[in-house]
Amino acid sequence: MLNAAAHEGVSWSDLAEDCVNVAKLPVGGARLADRILGRLKPALEEELCLFQWAGQSHCDRAFFKFVVGPLRLRAFERHGLTAPESEASIRIHDIVFTALKSLNWLTDEKARQIDSKLDAFILQQIRGDGHGLQLIASQLKDKIASNVEKGDRRPAFLYALSMVWMGSAIQNQLLPNPLEDANRLRSLSATKNEVAILVVLESIEAKERYFRHISGEEAAIKWLGTIVQAYDDLAAMVGLDARQAAEIKYHHAKTLRSLGKHAEAEHLFQEVVASYSLNEAKLQLVRSCSRRHQCYETAQRYASEIISTKQDNGSVSPSLLMALGDALNGARQTWAGELIEQHEELFLSEALYSAVIGIPQGYHSVASFVRALVWHAPERVQNVLARLPEPTPLMLDDDQSRGSYAEIMLLAASVDDHPTYLNRALEAFETLKAPDPYQRRKWGESLYKLGRYAEAEAILETIEDKSGWIWLAHNLSQVKLELGKFQEALDLVNDSVTGAIGVNEKYRSSFLLQRVKVKVALHQDPADDIVEGRRHTTNPGLLEQFSEF
Image (tube, rainbow, N blue to C red; front, side, top):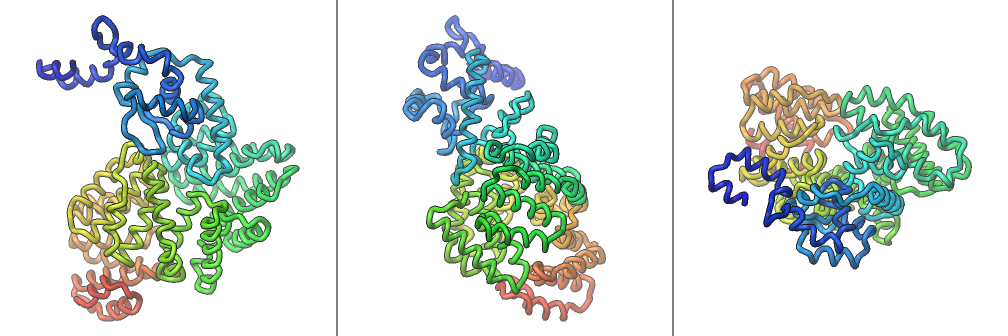
């Protein structure tokens, strides 16, 4: 019908309106929706009501099976209503969903029943070590948020949102007040309020992410300073088991670290590890010890313990494993090189699988691998890219996934001159809803590499990022050099070189190379920078570039 209308010269705007209302088109004396789905109502009403309830054409496969059972799931897929999707999701064809929206199959009572099933399913996943919680929270976050907004503030729903929301997606007004909730819980039993405790802990982290993204680091730190009492209130609850006490202390330590109280935070992390051996606390110690040469052996020990636990099928979630992989990739030059080489496939396969099934952290973790390989083993980058899944709308449904995919393409362009990678990177960056400072910096870097220097300068100069200034200054210096603004380029790269000390010393040679280029443009002697730059690196690519001068 739509093809016929197009051939008759109907305008595209009218055709678009027809597509929106396609389910109501008359076919043989009946609406298209009734022709397509009416005959299936007796057999598939409950299954199709799940999509009406979710308000979207896809649903988490494990939850779908939890509601209808495995037998009915297999039968449903034999009716030809589903479209190709990842193994963790089930999707019906768009025309089926459009038709479904015009039908009134979902009753209020049925919706309440599915809500209760969702509550039970999330509670079942919270203590699991699989992908279930991340998947259900990612795929149904809009539905869960809608429920919360309408007043259904079950702890399981609030926990899922607190865990999955990032950046601009965080609806701060829907999250609980952690200080008030902790004060209320203080006099209650910990045994009967396990998820409510987790909600307080995760909502603190979600709100911190919100304030960092919306108002900046200073606002986030100021807010964190007002809620420290929440941890004391939770710790005073009656009936806390060893794990609950450890989790409260662990989150307290993370807050202290964000407040700049690093010694106190590390002491608490060590207390947690000694009392319960929480792997999340071990990861935090791996990160903090990575910054101090005298602590490298401790970092290696804790990282090895987490890996051994995972290999022995112990309690290590996919999220924790990917985060550890990111930490090891960042420390390849110092203490973690041998460890990550030995267990690289363990981490990389988890990151790739998570990306395939639509977990946002998956692309982020793959990006950390590609970033490390570009530096340490550029010849292996193409092998990782060959295993990278093609992005789908579900996979790239948030800024974290989109931004990480864009960075992977940007990194790929540094080992392959084919313009496709840079164009893909730019396209992905341009779809970001509310990019954070890091993503905007990488966006500017993409424009720089495409030779669009004025546009790159415009983006980079709008970024406020104190913690990332040395890298932002480096990017800006590169752009200013190409635009002939040599003195500005020198001032900026001087900041980069000055800041490349301690944990950031590994970037010093890259910054010195940029300063060499600027000094050459200014007809200044770069000899000292060349000597120092060569002394600080073993990277063949950098050494070759220094040799050219």
